[in-house]
Length: 240
Image 1 (tube, one colour):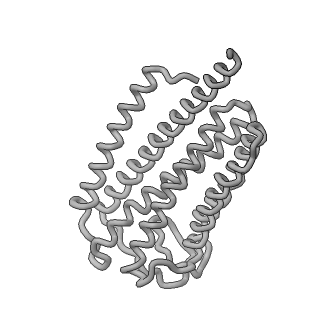
Image 2: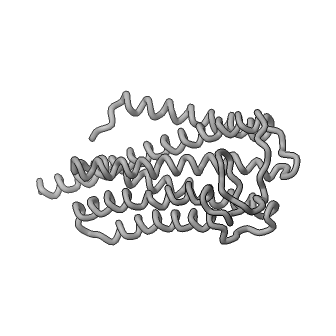
Image 3: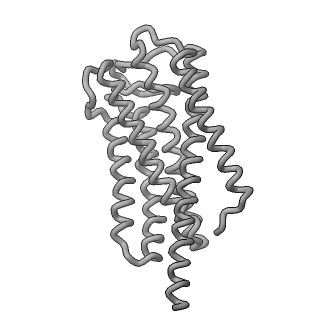
């Protein structure tokens, strides 16, 4: 699939837009949203933490869609989408974990604790990391794509479990940004959501979701070019 000049132009425009949104998000985080009274500046990691989590959630969901489409059509473009989505999703979820650890150090006085939410996030990340390793170990292209499609669909169960665990386990200390929870323990790190915090959070989530999509689009384009180079090599060998 050749990339048209119009598609390339749109990608370029959206790339610059996403850069502008990242800058605007940083300004809102640093200057518009006032430091939380108890947590101070450590709370500002909350915007990056949730923004990148939503970005990875969207990408892992895209991998499910791509897997279903590949199994239905056997078109390689869906395999490219699934691979790119999981690769970029892993990066975003890693930022989620690192930013969470950086927040936990001053708030919980530890970088990491085996809280149910943190544990499920770690399992989720390892599940998708295993996707890349197992995929690389399969030599037959068709079998590799079929395996990747099925794995990408099934792996999303770890994402769903990560989302619901905080709302059904009574022993988690991880704060909930929105919605009810069954937690009966003291949630260390919870804070009131002021209007400016909510506005900055929603803007950051939108920004990071868009950035995740744009980066994935660039990754698909690179994969497309790799296919083109490989096909030209095959054609060259056949003509010699």
